[in-house]
Length: 182
Image (tube, rainbow, N blue to C red; front, side):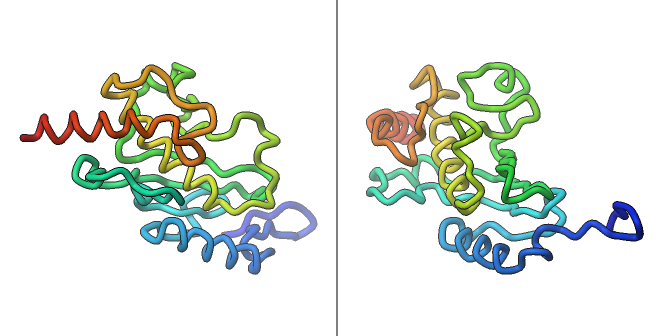
């Protein structure tokens, strides 16, 4: 049901007002994260839910990563009615970070549990697809695993998606997980 905003006018969801933008967003997301499903009721302005790919990056995936980490990050990507002017909220669902992690800046989480993927608000112009943030969220997942196991003490500023800085730590994580499983 649409909310009335005055003089008998009803609020129109952004995706109905801009169907071409919705089509571009859905296609971009399908290329990056085919296991996410668009749902108009995920957020106030629709969104996606499902599992992000484990390694959606352009560079080669570390050997045996899929043996050490069997699934990608489960998320809800919530768009606001003001999309694309305001960046979406990406909430990790599996694994779901503890409340304690939300209180520490080093985890790149907001108090509501959503990911903090941008250095400054101007990093989101509204011209880029949400799929760009989905890629960063996939990198956040790997950094989360590294921190949760104590391999690193803080997350990168730019993220694994755009930097090889933590690739050696990922290799250490893989070795630890696979040797521990043996």
